[in-house]
Length: 225
Image (cartoon, rainbow, N blue to C red; front, side, top):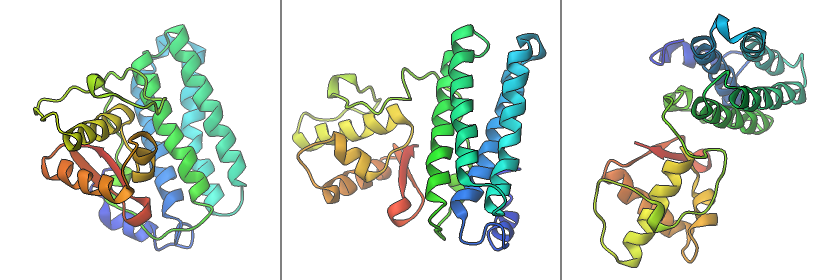
């Protein structure tokens, strides 16, 4: 479904299926987009293993719909997601899919798993940015949320050596490494300052055009611009 289908998104979120269940609608759209990506990455020459992964991925959006309809327990969809995570990691090890692509898609499926659980507690907040699937750049280790140091951060904009600029660099590096982060996740890595301070530094990064905010209120996430 095109990202500009705002009218249909609004309709879907008003239906009895997804009303108050924006997180499950996110999971439906996201899992469909991941299946589209896999249809491009996995070729017939990859053998039966690649075909099986694609078909399992293609079935997940339908499972999410049945979860939203109350016909299937959310644990069934979660089991499918965890199975796909294993499939992708094994496919990367066997060379069926590149390690970079597998790592990014695993990160996307982790986000689906988190939102499936969140969807058990209805939330009315949703934005168009929630339905976008990131491109496939090379990533070192997007599955790990590890603390960063200033020496690990590369950015085209030069920053001074003040404590404030060091903190801003740490925040930017963490977001770039993990592709998205909440204020609480950042606070767990950037020590010695309040969430209010981190929020202010994020505002600075947004003004510089280095970071974007998606979502609203406590569901807000920060992603590379």
